[in-house]
Amino acid sequence: MSFDLQGFPADSAALASLAARGLDYRLVDTRDAAAASAWVQADFRGFHHARPRQVDLDYDLGVLADRRVHGVYDSSIVDPAVPVATVSSWPTGLSVPGGRSVDAWAVSSVTVSPTHRRRGIARALMLAELQNARAAGAALAMLTATEATIYGRYGYAPAARASTVHVDRRRVHWVGPDAPGRVQFVDAASIREAAPAIARRAVARTPGEIDRWPGLLDRVLGLHDPDSERSRARRVVRYDDERGQAQGFAVFRVTREPNEPGVAEFDFLAAATDDAERALWRFLVEQDFVSGTRGLLRSVDEPLPWLLEDPRAVSFSDVVDHLWLRVIDPVTALTARRYSAPGRLLLEVDDPAGIAGGRFELVVDDAGRAEVTALEQADAAASAKGVRSIRLGVRELGAIYLGGVHPSVLARAGRVDERSPGSISAADAMFAAQRAPHLSIWF
Image (cartoon, rainbow, N blue to C red; front, top):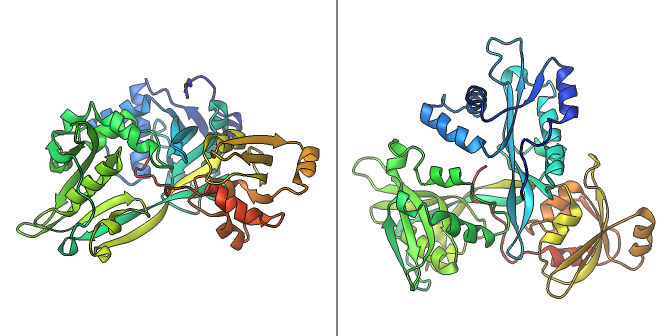
């Protein structure tokens, strides 16, 4: 999605509502080092991080150059140059079932100072981002949430889960196939050139993953601050296939007390093939002088238990609703993905914000390709005769979109209404995904 991030003004509704409270909602010029640095200071404070060092500021300023950044300012405080609320956003691709991608609007860095709570700031910011997403032509908006009770009121719903995977080293006995290639240690800087291509292929394999931006790869490889203790503790391994082509890499570190077995921990593994995924997992769980391996933000449907003789060596904890989606353009969003069963389904979507509501006819052919038509009231009534139909809210549509939540589960919860017999079963079959949706990063 090609889009000028500075090419349209700040949302007029947010400007008016915050101005009525004596606050200034402002689009930050990321080329203004002083203004952008003050914004970063507020962002760090909002997430309870330590004050940024210069290297942190330099890194964040580089990332923000490719984002649309807003702040809310209060001219009456001691330091009016530092915003009392922050948000950043940018257009990016979201992987959907069928190995395809859809244009989405990523929302991040949502903070409100504790000195300015309950003034309608968060609401103004979030509603403005929905309008920004529409202006950018995005089919969906998305975010990763630290709290689960905030974003539903703006139409977002959890669509992909993540978990922490623990592996007991004492019980590891690999019974999976041997990979035809090999795993080897590499220097972080040496893999930086190949990393984007590997990451792109890895992202395309899994619904729920999003495009990796250059700054993210620099951070996970420790290249943004190579002399820090954390960066120096990182180790990078690469999987090369039998032809010597790089097909995956992982970044890990071993945390331990002196002279005690440690824990091999990783939060970044990019595998473009199944062989690469299995080989990297095997390397990580067969470490010596560790009590186990811990993988962060992993899929709830990892193949690892099926690769070990004792599947109980693997346990899952901290299962969370990680990726939240908000449908902006139902026609574009529903057309973008592939479906697991053919059929015809009428979707009646309620959206209190008036953005994505309406009646939509979803027709899927035998190859899983969809044609989606927005229907007028009279056309919808005529089409509904003898056609399977469900009614749901925009939140529920976001929840089922990637296939991670079955429509039948939401129907049992009273959140999807079956308008004609067999409609829920048909929706389950159509929206199912062969691979569980998963997002392996924060943004």
